[in-house]
Image 1 (cartoon, rainbow, N blue to C red):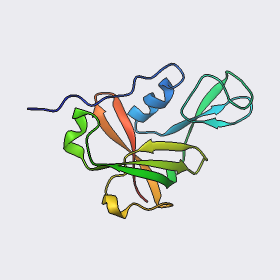
Image 2: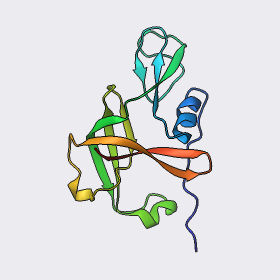
Image 3: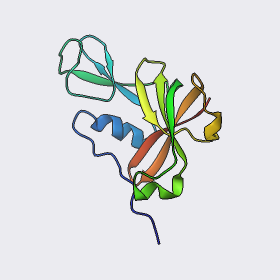
Length: 135
């Protein structure tokens, strides 16, 4: 018996370029074309200057663990074979935070401030999720 399919992103117009880059194993961030504010997750309007213009730029892919949780019970049936699994909040060098899983480490070894680098998990054809590995 196989587990149900894993939920995958359903990108809106603002986030489509982010997910297209992720499928190519590239981490990009949306930046306001008017004032330069980096915004994540991507959205149509800049929260600083209200500009609707934006560009996407390559991110460093480096950050530090800001917070984390370890799930011991599956929230969705498609994650039943993964428990216990971690979900980390990574503060990127660029100053924004992203959520993902931290791989190649025991959950008990995760520590605040730990340096991490981005990697990508291919979950289905054309869909890759940013994940993290210890630096």
